[in-house]
View 1: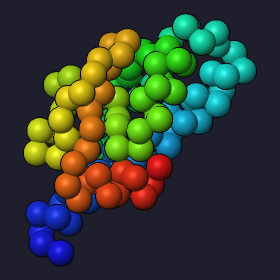
View 2: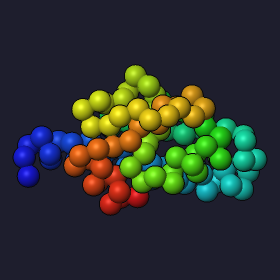
View 3: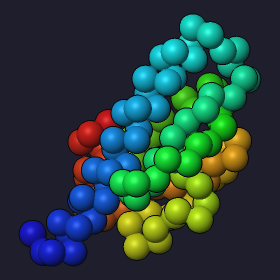
View 4: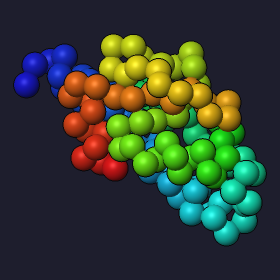
Length: 109
C-alpha cells in the first residue's frame, strides 16, 4: 500500500466515524421525527475536527444510506481527491467515494 492509499483510507475512516454517529441520530429520529422532518446530523467529511451540522429529512437520509459509498457533507468540505459530488439533500452535499476510500466506506458501512 502506498502512502497516498494509506492517507486516503485514513480520511475515509474519519468520514465513517461521523456516519456511525448519524446512524444513531437516525434511530432516535425514527421514534421522534416524521419522515419529512429534518434530522440534525454531523457533517460526514474527512476533517476529524469538523463539528458542523446538516439538516436532512429522515427520508432523504435513508435514500443516501442505501449506497454505502455515499456521505453527506457541507459543500465546502468536499475533498475532490477522494470523492465526487452526486446530489444535494436538505442543506447537505452528497458525495460518493472512489478508489481506496470507497473500499473503506463500504467495509465500515
